Length: 159
Image 1 (spheres, helix red, strand yellow):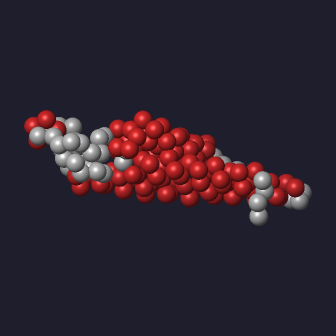
Image 2 (cartoon, one colour):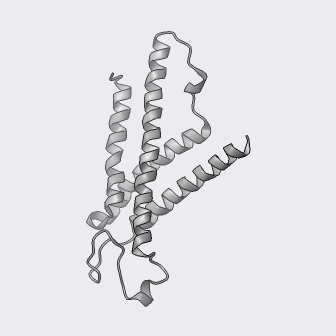
C-alpha cells in the first residue's frame, strides 16, 4: 500500500469517526429547552453552566452539516453496492464471468455497514429523544426506509 492509499485510508477513517461523534453529540444534545426555546439549537443555559460542554452554535451547525454530508456520501456508496449486487446477479444468471472490480474490499464492507449502523442509530436516537430530536438525526432514521426499499428492489430484481 503506497502513501496515497494510506492517506486516503486515514482520512476515510477520520471521516467515519467524525460522523459518529456528530451523530452521538447532535442526537443526544437537547434541541430545545425552556430556557432558550430555540428548536434545532443546543440548549442555552447560563454561560457558566454550559461553557465547557456546548460548542458554539456555528460549530453545532457544522456538526449537523457533517452528518448530512457524510451520510449522503455513504448513501451514494451503499447505492452503488446495491447496484453492483444487481449487476453481479444478472452476470451470473447470464453465465458471464464477473469482472475483478465487482468484489468489495474489507474497508468498503466496513463503510457500507457503518452507514447501515448509523441509520439504525439515528432511528434509535429519534425514538429515544422523541419530538426534541434534531432534524438531521430524524432524517437519518427516515433514510433507513430508502435503504430497505433499495435492498427490496434488488431482491425482487426490479429493472
